[in-house]
Amino acid sequence: MRLPVPQRAEFAAELLDSLDEGVAEDPEEARVRWLTEINRRAESVEDGTAEFESWDSVRERMSRCLGG
Image (cartoon, rainbow, N blue to C red; front, side):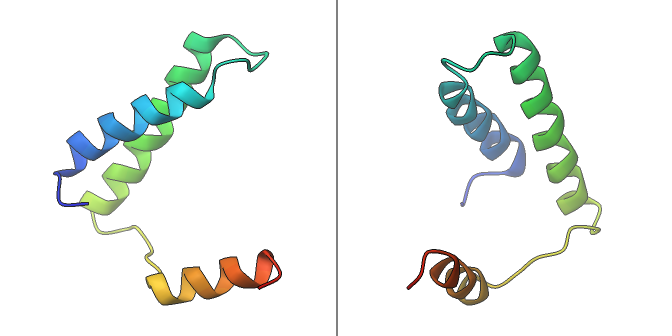
């Protein structure tokens, strides 16, 4: 989380690429779509339009979804 946004986006893209294995769609198309989404989200953080949620709120919501 301490990396600059572009480096985090690149790291996230690599992780997401690893999840695309075995997916029926074209891997290059999936890669481009993920990179587009990552860049869109990074830009929204940089331009101040991103909406954030506290970790406590996210953790609570996840716990409810998982029946915890």
